[in-house]
Length: 308
Ligand code: CP
Image 1 (cartoon, helix red, strand yellow):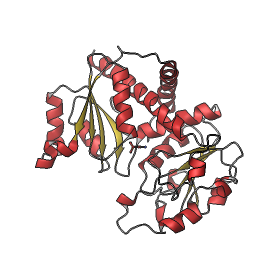
Image 2: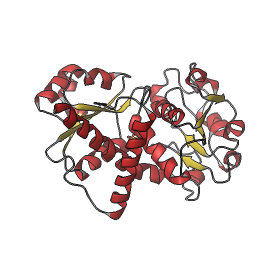
Image 3: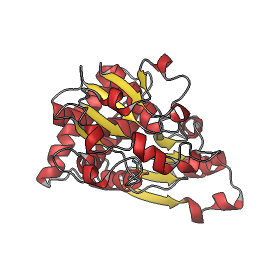
Image 4: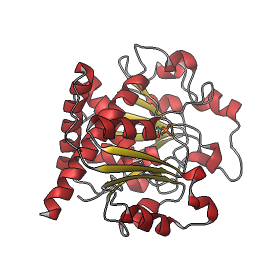
């Protein structure tokens, strides 16, 4: 594969190869050893049209750990503000001989469009409500480390599924890796096509969490809600916010995940988010660096292979 634009349709062996390489980078990162020559001489540009803390920083760290020259393009001070189009921005980056281009954009499909216009390998760092592939890969790596496998686990993805690119990427990956996937939320926040994706839909947290191995909470994305939040934040927390009482319906050793940034007291109670016996939110962030190192490494290898 030349780019990483989506997980939908990716072959399970390719996903497993990415996770295995990410696991080896996770071990190297923990031992403090670095791999400075894998991307030596390569240029990576981070092009973020939407805000980010975790994804942008971890791509920067991943690129630097592998020896790439990393540029963070600040869109808010770029010529995009003078009306330059996405495709003209792409031509400019192409002329600078960029090897790896990481893009986050509010429009679903923007990274795919860009990938047709640039020579660089394009990595989707989140596009609209479509996909966030590296987030789902780091979630899968975290689950695999904690549970020892991905197959035959029951994963409940809860909350604002409608606006969540994280949920879509996770659904595609987890189904491809033979997990049972449930989505849980109010009817206003569940996409109409949900059941066609092959997941089970629940509107009651207790039923949706029953005997789950993994409880994955999502951020309420108020910035994508045209008509405001229905139900209100207070009602949402009461019925769908993860607290100790609701978590008791999952398996006793169920892990709790959240991609971040969190709305504490809205989709998740702080006591659960900060509980080291249940929450793996910190490990998700740690695995984000390892997964992004693996993605950069494999796409760069593919580029060299194609150039031969
Ligand atoms: N999970 C995630 O994508 O976080 P950021 O928006 O901080 O990158």
